[in-house]
Image (cartoon, rainbow, N blue to C red; front, side):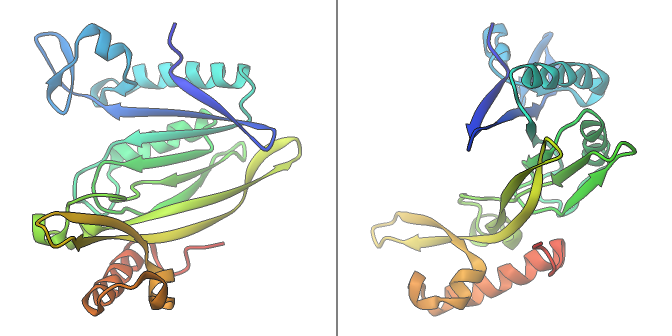
Length: 237
């Protein structure tokens, strides 16, 4: 039977990874993703959840978390495809699901789908378990530029680098580093483009390293301003 997760061993410690995407309304009794009907075989290959049956999702992922722990995972990362497109703040579903996954023992939630960044936060439950939640990382590599769709925020993203430590026989986050990014659409001169993921702060501080045209640095600064307006300016620990 196909496992719905993977376990990676990093520096001798096992970390569990699992991802889910939201389903769109059923058609002719079949599950759909982005309104595309999934065959029964295809549906078995995709971890999905139904917003109208979250209890079913919670039961399923709780079972998968327990299986990951049985396989030796000391730290659980869940990727969630959720939220509203082009909305720079999370919705109530994202918050409710995050709170439940925190109760189930997930350590990090990495969100995507909105195509723009959303805030990150930390949730601590009554038992002291902490979950780091990224509601949306925005677009990492994408052609959704301001010129293409009229939404400048679609050019922005951020990466998160986690450093973990073993403390009290548990694996937990020691520190994290937020890296704002911007997608640079570079004209190759033949009607096609390179798309480069630019770490915004490093490029602003070291312009000679990236060799971007002047207009790109102005857009980098605007991207950083947009990112800071959503996640704040004090985003590293």
